[in-house]
Length: 125
Image (cartoon, rainbow, N blue to C red; front, side):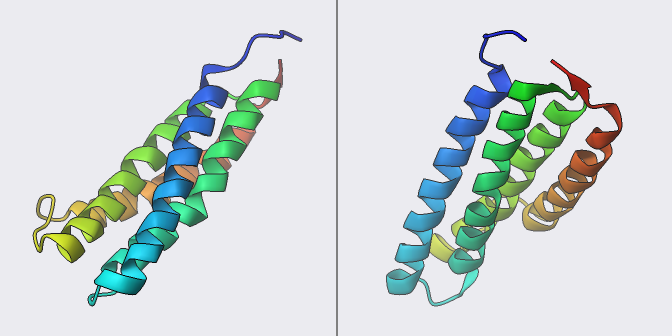
């Protein structure tokens, strides 16, 4: 087993930490400044997925899972689009682009499917 730190572990820690921190911040902000409820939904999505980013990074550290980076990337892009669009709508009243939130939601669903499918090719490090 290698002592090298997986790039996905580092990325998982960074993205998971940022997702969790922004989720807490947006949840607090939603309690004081959001009348739409959109920011609260975005904050929940960020908070729910923060531990998943950490978990994917940890799995990448202890096992070789060739498809895991794809699942990770899909989830990052999906959560960013979904939450980003809802937060933009709640704070400045505009969308990131047409269909940003639904596209982000579909990418997030695809990331969960990719995560499940990644179990097919798990190998020891």
